[in-house]
Image (tube, rainbow, N blue to C red):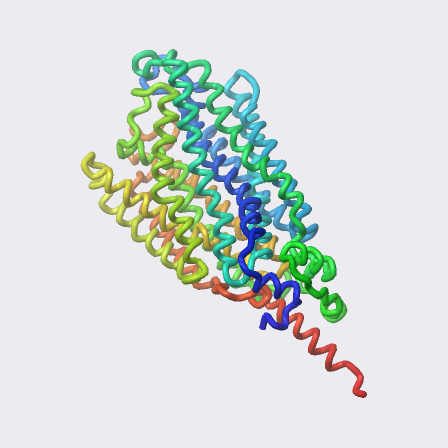
Length: 534
């Protein structure tokens, strides 16, 4: 079928893996590096913000953020991301991928720096400005999801497309690692320079005045890697699929890709013009879209939604789970800087052992066993390990069994990343038509972020102790960690079922998946039929 495709698209489909593929992965992946760095650094920072700005005189425990503030700081970036995914997804189809691509990166860099410069001396002013900039940081990050996935899928060849899109997403793993490692370095440096007693020894002196710099530096450094790739983003040519199939300029597409692939490509402007004359393209809200791709869109949105409920509730609250099983000592036995180091170390270990390997196993296998198989395997094992953690939960809380708990918990993460966390990102960039690709990816990703918001906030309240006296300050009694894990197991099981709505795209061209090939062939066929007989 791809033989009937435009020659410029065919050339991309069959191109050997070249240097430009790798530069595209780095350029597109840096946004995800920043995204992961930031979203996971905020969990290091929140404990410290509680100590600095919400210290209660005479309290036996260090200050913590009140529930509403904690929810705002953690959640506002997710809300921004959701809005950015929808807006930039739509804009990427309207204006072109390249035009919008530099804007999202600039927004991320500026807001990373600005969130570290949150100003004011009172808790309220610092938190308000921090939340404001984190919303816009999220907005920029959100734009990166549909644009990076679409650009990578439209640049890649048929054979290794899945691996390339997954590699862009896998840069998140490095972002998480960088966040953890940088957190450890900066806290070690401050701890060496400014000695402080534990909270239980001297509550006031345990939080040094310089601690206010630590969280700001951690947040601001997230902008550096993204800034380094800004120039290259601006130099990237528009994708051939957008130029030819959406902007209808086959000549420009052929010229751009001739430079990239370093081969001569015939323009075939007549094929594109025939399409324009013959057929009005169907839109997102048309009956034809519903018939062709309605179930696909339901599949990509529902699986991403369900995955992110489980994924974000685990991820943002890792530190609470670690504290609950005693991996992180009680806060009062440490000073503010030591606490940052301990949480950073725990997160880095989990990332090294499970998160990062999971991403790269997906990259290695996605074009071998396919997207569908990886997503089914991932959801299946996430369900199994969640239930295995939940039902004998009391067994896992005994000090002797803690290592087992962490191992099971790491495996859940491994199968999220060697599984639906990667595939839900890859598939929406492959199965929709070029003129709606970025929009549909944005809708799918936004649905995921809605799940993330539910996971992050739902879990905050759900996991509270059933005994109101034992719940955290300011929270109502919840259903406890055990029941919360059972709920997450059920969510994973639903994700497994909805996966059956998503088609397999391994080894097929983008136009074959989206049905655009049929449109091109129909036009060519009908123009041949209407030609006068000699």
